Every structure is written in C-alpha cells, then in structure tokens.
Amino acid sequence: MTGWTLFFIMVGVGFLTAQLFRIIDAIERPSRRPRRAGAR
Image 1 (cartoon, rainbow, N blue to C red):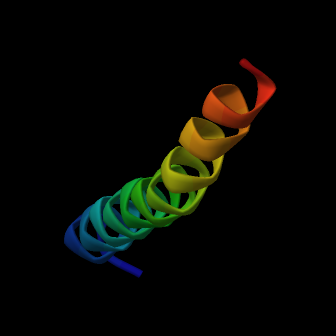
Image 2: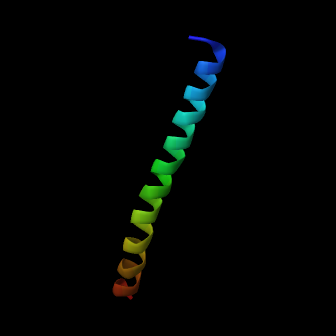
C-alpha cells in the first residue's frame, strides 16, 4: 500500500463518516421539534 492509497482511504472514510452524521442529524431534527411543541 502506497502513501497515496492510504491518503485516499482516509479521505474516503472521513467523507463517509461526515455524511453518516449528516443523515443522523437530519433524522433527529424533525423528531425533536414536535416533541417540544407537544410538551408545551
């Protein structure tokens, strides 16, 4: 494995991790708002 291969693997893993957290955040945001509004 060359240094470039390792570099692109790390960039890919970082990109996929960022997308995963964006998806989780998008799922959690809509479910948070109605709960707060319903509690009031």
